Length: 128
Ligand SMILES: [Zn+2]
Image (cartoon, rainbow, N blue to C red; front, side, top):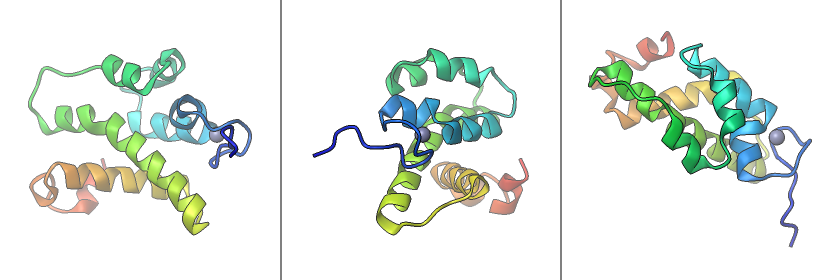
């Protein structure tokens, strides 16, 4: 059993949780795209040594606004979809583009927050 499998996203490094979720160039592109310059997410990813640590350091907003709720769930949706993306690559041998992964993350957020109550339709969320 090979416990040091190659990262399925970049094929350049060993697949550890930290690499897969925070350090992989593919993962970092997704974090940066979805963070949209709200925080210095690259710094946070570099400083995080565990998934739990990143989730604990993720900045929160003292608001019950939809934006604050989306923001609070964003790291969970990114990590969940990175995991699903790896499984899709491994078990279905099917590559996803960065755009498709980002759309999947937004779809996850849309679903987790109640779908149609969040925006009139999913297209509205894709534009934000
Ligand atoms: Zn990688």
